[in-house]
Image 1 (spheres, rainbow, N blue to C red):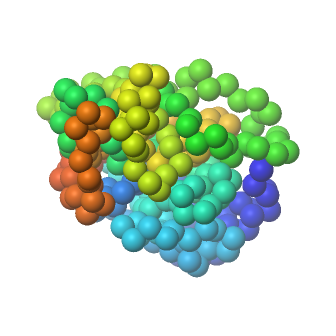
Image 2: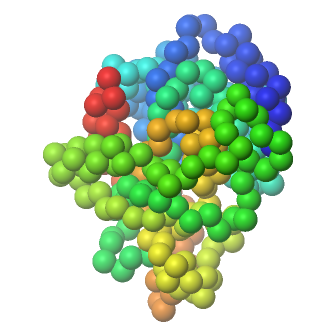
Length: 275
């Protein structure tokens, strides 16, 4: 379990670095290739992870590694532009530190976005998927060790990890905007290696519709904290076990970038409904 002191130190560091008062209502984590979403935000403050005491640095090249504060649809938000992953060598507590810091700064809603491989043959690359549930294949959890009672209960409920009302809101707003938004189950894996055909076949048979290397640790921590959660995956490539192809990272990023406009429009609409 993460030290409460480290989260406190990071929060105090952010407040000292900030030139403006920070009071975000919604926290949004951006996945691989989705960093341009910040262009939709009226930015008031940008703080690099490297400048924050006790906060883990982002090592993924496509992740900016900074918190962006501002407003989106007149709602105060904080954007985690780049996240940390288990495959970088970080612990589950370090991976989930971003959401714990954002909760300490005042958010009550957490939106997690990610790039994921698609396990459904009928869905095209670039499609967005509202996460209805997840399967944790990492074998890890940010709740290991002594419980921090100030954050939440020892055994938090995960029967509705992803808020049904937020999912309904996202589906309704997507329909209004003419954006294709599917619903499905996300399989969280450790990485960084891509999935084998046998693994992909197993994930699908166990009920997953998409697979990725993030999100699950943060969502567990968010629910432990009592936050409402919405998860949206950008399905950047098809993972079909009988005809798998090598998919380079730059292609995944290009697909995510192309889907970025739809994601931006959708999240703006959903956030506006939270006013």
